[in-house]
Length: 306
Image (cartoon, rainbow, N blue to C red; front, top):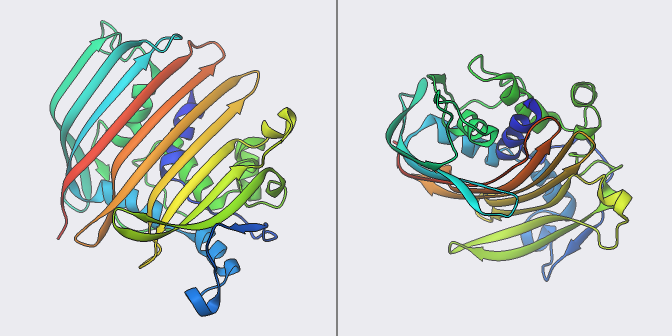
């Protein structure tokens, strides 16, 4: 089950970083990008996207700063009927060096826990690992390629490795062909995607949009090679911070089938960039385990940021 936790972690913590490749063909959606109009070229825009650390930094801030949280997780059967619900609310407390969770309330109904208190399903366990650590964890605001905390599980360390080094030889050796197909800018993957730059007003902020979507009319064989089916990012024009991102991730093999949709809304608290609204809708089916369908919603508020 390591692969499930790895994918949850990757999708929430990853960046659009890839090795140097040929520049893919970029579509401009009712927008003109030029040095004269924007202060950068299309090529430079793509480099900003590929080297962005703001999305990951937002999740570093989420662990670093004290805040309130409330979450709801629903488990569904194969007919999409809810069979279990789990709600949590509380305080994520941080002293700037360590962080821990203090639960105010927890509510469950239906098939969530076993009699011994363990989860009946793996999905809530995976989300606990990403967002609700059971033990005290070390926190900081340093980003580096070797940003591997001893407090993180191997799953989270793998996720960070892939997030920083998609398409490199080290990742290929560790993760085989899957990581290669996560490298959406890699020259071998460009034939599966359309890349589009546009504009939008989001939360009263002027933003650039950047979308990566499967090309139309791909064969069934080709579309299976594109594990990331869709990524949409909104970049704040004032500072190029990612303030919205959504993913669609699909993977099918004889061993595992996945279909995940994730949306992350970001905002500013005293000029600190944090995720405020995170949602997940997904399905996975791994050989020798029962399939799981679930939705998850996490709201973060009342950040204490000096």
